[in-house]
Amino acid sequence: MTLRLFNTLSGQMDDLVPSDGQTLRMYACGPTVYDYGHIGNFRTFLQVDVLRRFLLLTGMKLRHVMNITDVDDKIIRNASAAGIPIGEYTPRYVDAFFEDLDALRVQRPEEIARATENIDRMVALIQKLAEANAAYQTEDGSWYFRLSAFPAYGKLSKKDLSGMEDGARVDVDEYEKDSARDFALWKAAKPGETAWDTPIGRGRPGWHIECSAMSMAYLGDSFDLHAGGEDLMFPHHENEIAQSESVTHKPLAHHWMHVRFLLVDGRKMAKSEGNFYTLRDLLLRGYKASAIRLALISVPYRHQLNFTFDGLIEATAAIERLRTFRERLTKGVFAAGSNPELKAAAETAHSGYMAALANDLNTAEARAPIFDLVRTANTAIDQGKLLADDRDAMLDVLRDFDAVFDVIEDKDAVPTQRAIEWAQAAGRAADIAPELLARQSLTDEAIEKLVAERTLAKKQRNFARADQIRNELAEKGVLLEDSKDGVRWKRK
Ligand code: AMP
Ligand code: ZN
Image (cartoon, rainbow, N blue to C red; front, top):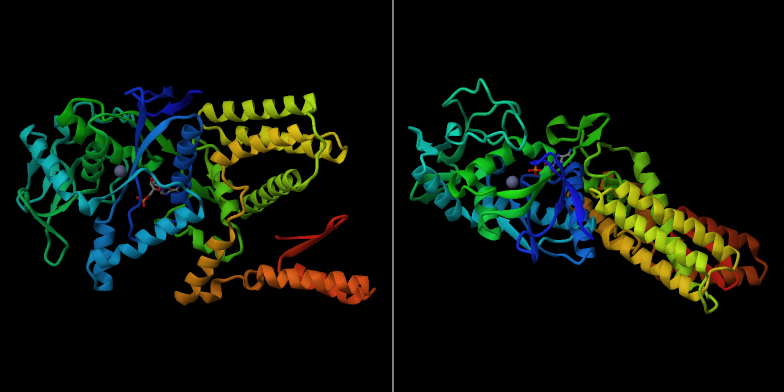
């Protein structure tokens, strides 16, 4: 099965296939580690995870590289405000980033490239640009890319650059979004700033040269796919193309994928807007990591998603439905045999699911047949029509659903516990929702003990105590279900 993926460069849907016929080589821009990421950032990483997991599900081999920008203006500014070198400032945010990725079950790329460990490669690329007359040095020792040396500039974002002023420069990492200028490749050291002594002078790399140098070092001059959030299309990706292609004269990447921004109240979620939530903020309010994952991936990557708490509540309920269904299948007893109608239903759901993902990763359309199947199968179980082979077929469908969505397996306790411990250590204990603390304080053993006590109380016809225990557990988010085979409990 081949993925048809919208390609920003060609402006149409193209097949995504490895150009070497074997391994798909892809580069996705990673975080700038100056602070905790917000869930808008994570929506982009999650959508790349959906892409990654779907490709793996179709049997493709991947070499996926992500960078970590661990030197830039904001990092230098924040580290200097904290009075520490950047090498001491960034590790905590690198660790936090990976912790958040793990909580959201984002798979690790094959390779992680750190900017500060690849300075020599960036310097070498700038030297080649200088040889090609596409880079020049200014009086202060900084290096700039000469935009007029690359006539194809703008081909990705389809910007009309007429009226561009030759030699106009911009030297900050936080670029103007609408004007194209000669941009910094290398920034000469200012007193007290982190800098490297190199053949092109003492200084540090610009942001764009990082991704050009590292993507080509790890994946070759020309690779299959380059991905990032929509804000990176211009100027970051456009600049990467200009830098790389001026030297190699080959397309940097054949396919470009851009994830649309997460909005809040119709505005983009951004640090600068002050309207953001970190993953930790949401975990501390009691939302589960799986629900956050599902809410952020259920709207396809090219559609605008407006973040709401209702969306998280909907995702929580959807996951509960799936988990309960799977438990019914795995714990239930089914007679041998197969029901042709259910076999067909499982096949239809599976092919609908795969086809939707193969069509530009349409996660919303991929979900629908799975939930239809859950409804059909639940009814069949109620009516005693679901047989052992059908159960296996249903479990196979759920397995492939989870290969991409990864929300059915309940691994939510650890991220929540970690967020609580982090908040306590960071002096933010007041941000922890009280019911969350109550819920987390109850161990599985304590629940089992109360459940056993309640069973005994009922046997002794002490219904008041039995009810009291049920209520106490409910307050702490534990639900009891009485069935023929005894009492089952689960956390909300
Ligand atoms: P940064 O750490 O700022 O370099 O951003 C990391 C990634 O998050 C980039 O791919 C950005 O394009 C992406 N990003 C930033 N804000 C949002 C948002 N509101 N929605 C989706 N992606 C975003
Ligand atoms: Zn990049």
